[in-house]
Length: 85
Image 1 (cartoon, rainbow, N blue to C red):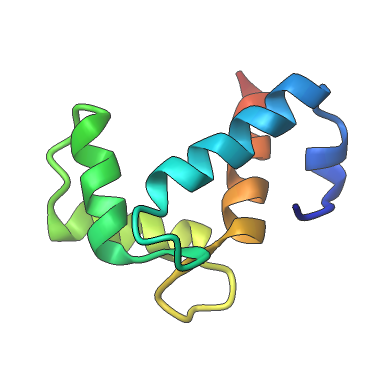
Image 2: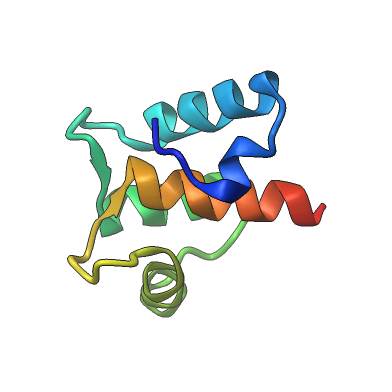
C-alpha cells in the first residue's frame, strides 16, 4: 500500500478500508481501476456514471495521466477525502 503523508495520518482501520474498497473496485484484479470499472463504481454510489463524470474523476485522481487509477492514486484520493470529512 502506498505511503503518503495524508495516508499515514489515518487510523489502521481506515487504511484497511481503503485497500478493501480498491479491491472491490478493481473487478478484474489488474491492480488498477480502469474507466469501465470507475463507471460501475459511480453507478453503485448512485451517480449517473456518465462519460463526463468518469473523465472528470480520472483527471482528478489519475496523477500520472495514464487513464488508470493505481492503488497509490486511489489511496491518496481516499485518504484526502477521509481526512476532510
